[in-house]
Image 1 (cartoon, rainbow, N blue to C red):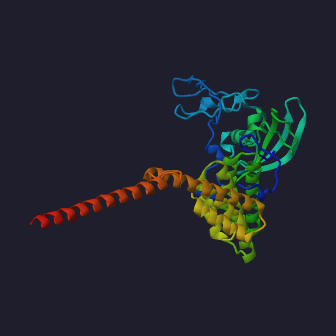
Image 2: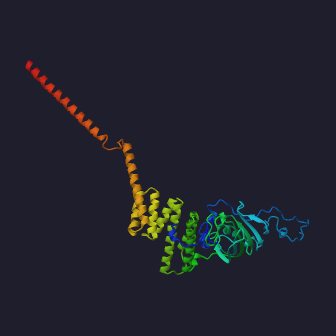
Length: 412
């Protein structure tokens, strides 16, 4: 049931080459990270059904209260009654009829509901609407609100009480969408029926206290979630998963860590930044993508993927000279890379065309003709002819002046 939180999950694969909040832990959550359930979605999670019934009135005017089996009758008039879980009544979670939840066995009360960022363990049985079994997992664990599972689970488990059993019906939008899934095998546009029992909810471990090997593994799993989102074209959710993985990998450690483990964490950070830049490029978030590339290159200045993506970002921002320099550096590090060759050739051509257009524009602004040789020659000829006319005229005036002087002198 792993997959995209926005209804487009898929098979989990490590695809670093795929070139792409609540925190995954309670300590990271304190740092202010936001989950996808808090951003980018235009739905509201409904905590419970509305109950208009007021507690029964007091029966004893002298201050005594008649005993009743209903606990709400014993509450203070100023205390908000806790709504009991109602069996066999469908709750429209999002208000659009596409995600519904029905309690089949009550839990331990609203106070026992899990919180986002906690690790939850459930018994899960998923089927198609026609009853075809998709999968059954008696001890399935995930981090609530981290977008590790389909959205139908991420949303509804938040509304469950400890020990509660519920039936959930989900539209494809909040399950596996129009692409379906290979693992588990779900056809495209399939509605799902989920039987869920909430078994346990525990706080996520403090990542600063995690052994380095466990921290590396946790960050890698979150990054792989991002790779799945990226493969399915869900780039915003990919960015979210990469951000969570990055926070885990960048967190300080209160336990001893060996140099080789530091190198592994650094490698995870660079992969997250590279894949995040790829996702941000797909979203046309060029400034954010450039920042991710710069961060990756601060860790590894000769990282070819970071240089390549940085060149693409600069090109898309119209900074062709810098883009060409960046891509040439990447090509120097990997001369046989055909992708870099193609991108660089395309960019050089585009830059040349832009320079030609700019030169034509400047000539037009300065009043110069666009076609050299057509007008300048007549201009030179005209100027030459004008010079000869002036010379002949001046000579004639001079000769006339001399003749007049001779005549005057002869008369005298």
